[in-house]
Structure formats: structure tokens, C-alpha cells
Image 1: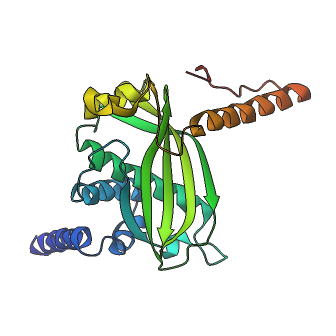
Image 2: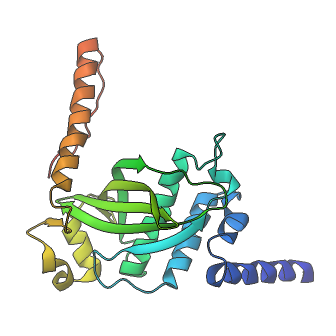
Length: 241
């Protein structure tokens, strides 16, 4: 009994140490390799984010740092492409907690509808990177997050994530309505035109990505049709809201 209590106390103190002193490194040592590691990592990221300063506006940048670990690299010695999406998840949780607090837990969800990542420079073992996340555009139910991976004053990769907000019943809702629920209508209405929003320099981005994403699906659907194969490509929801 005494041994078990000592172990739990040690783990608790180690968690506190990771949260306040070595967030970027011990994060992996403790959690990534455990069963259910992804969920534990999300929980740990949310706890870390809670102790960071709150964001004041829906378009503020959130920043959170990590260090590249053995489970991130591939046979080429740099971070594997798949790991970028994983860290983007953590970055969006960081933004959500710092922007909404705990109010959004169990009341709303945000799922990836489409993603695009550009890789400019490799990230290597033990490098410390910062993920900068920001909401840059919205059009109806589609909300775009820009996420950049930065290290030593250079952008190593940038991701554009098209997200869809869901309510507690997992039904898609207009992005502005979901943001207003947690931030208040006065805050959200400042820079919006109806249910459309674009940060400076991102005015045409939403429409371009919608056209690109729909074009990819249309081309694939036509390809299956030419082959005589019956395959449902588009979702049951309308392509444009």
C-alpha cells in the first residue's frame, strides 16, 4: 500500500514538473508510448494550455512548443509526415482551451474536413518547435485554421485545416454560431460579414480551398463513373453552405 501511494505521488509530482518546467520534452517520455497515448496526450496538452495566458480575440495566435522525439522520426532521420497532423491536433486543442476555457467541453466539437500541409524544411530529432495556430477564415459551416511549425526563426511547415464545428448532438453548425456560443455575439460580430469571415491577407483563401476540395471530389467521382464502378464519393451533406 505504501509503495503504491509513493508511486502515485511520484507520478503526480512528475506531471507537475512537466507542466511547469519541462513541457516540451517530458511530455513524450511520460505519455506518448503508453496505451491510449493519444487521448492522454490531448488531456496533458489541455492541462498545459489551461496555465497559459487566455486569448482575447477569436483571431489571436496560440503557441505551444514540443520537442521532436524518437517516435516522430522516420528512416530518413527527420520527422515523419504523419506526425505533423498529430501535432496540429495538439495545437488546435491549445487554441480551444486558451480561447474558450473549459466551457466548450462536451458542448461542441471541431472535426477536420480537409487538410493541406506544405513542408519547407525538415524537423530533426531533439529539435524544439513551436506550433502557431490561428483561425483565419470562415464561410458557413467551414472554418479554416492556419497552423505553422516554427523553429529557430524559420517556418518548417504550414498547414491549412478546413474544420467543421459540431454541436453536442454531433450535428454540423455554422461556424459563427458555434463561436458566438462560447465567446459571445458581440465579440464574434466585430469583423464578420454575415457568416463569412477572413483575416487580413486571407480574404480569398476560403473560396479557393472550397473550389479545390470540391474539384478533387468531382474528378474522383468522374473517374469511378468512367470505370463503371459504383462508389459514393461526396458526403450526404451539401458541398457548399
